[in-house]
Length: 185
Length: 186
Figure 1 (cartoon, each protein chain N blue to C red):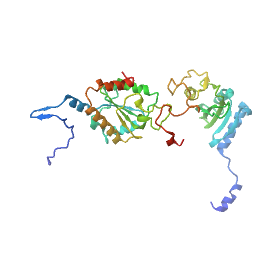
Figure 2 (cartoon, chains in turn cyan, red):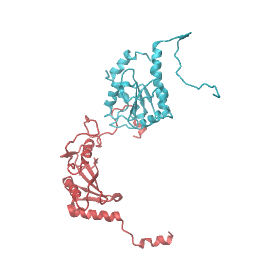
Figure 3 (cartoon, chains in turn cyan, red):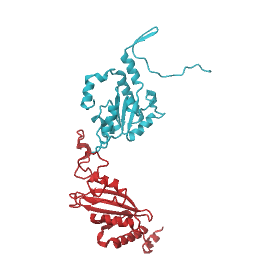
């Protein structure tokens, strides 16, 4: 070996805690939040052009795998993050809702692009004017279509949510009321 | 081309447009098969022979064109509905595009009928592709095709209770409250 440089490996920083010789103590919530945030498995619900942009995000150049989202889950039961990308027609709305209902807690939703956020340019009798009419949305990514950088930014905001929220979000009364308002059991 | 040539150009014999010649042949054949008073409003926009007929005769005409040994209109390219609310008792229409694959001839036929009585004979016994297109026309315009085997909505949600492409209905979503006409020049 000509040079003894250590390769620069980026890893997740340890959460706040008490360090000492041979031990490290922190709260369980922080550890679980760290684990959840760095292994978000997205379920790409891609219907149109934004789906193509997401494929670019998954490609080697933008590389969504860096965030632990290596495996896009095409089964809702193993997914943490529902990414709705593209126009959702009113005929498609029940299917989106069914996919959301089949996801296990903890689950987050990212609406990508103008159509998923608000119906976009399709202010039409056949298009759902934003997926937040049928399911709760955590992060909105604006743009038509958003660049891969914006998708990554949205994903990092979902990571912030996952890292910092309570482990028992599902049991919080606010969350129960929110799901109740969407008629989701 | 010099200016002198341009001056004499109109006197030179003009070669006849082959599309026009073909269209006049097809039209002559149509009038011979179905009678001259069957077709009204015959014109050729962009070289596409277009004629208007009546819904009573449309099935017979298209069946005749399909079985005709000379023209062989074996392909129904398109059929679609249209709505002109300003034409009394002719509000709805159906437009048929036929294509003869062997002769490479295209033909467009139109029929118009009142919105209160939107009943048209089906073409599913002639062309299989008419099945899908007629369901679409029923879905968006409410045209009833007598004899269609399965006339139900195909593209819109099943519980829709109106025909969205009729111009009496707004195209926009009725539940939006955040849009003002200020930004849309209305």
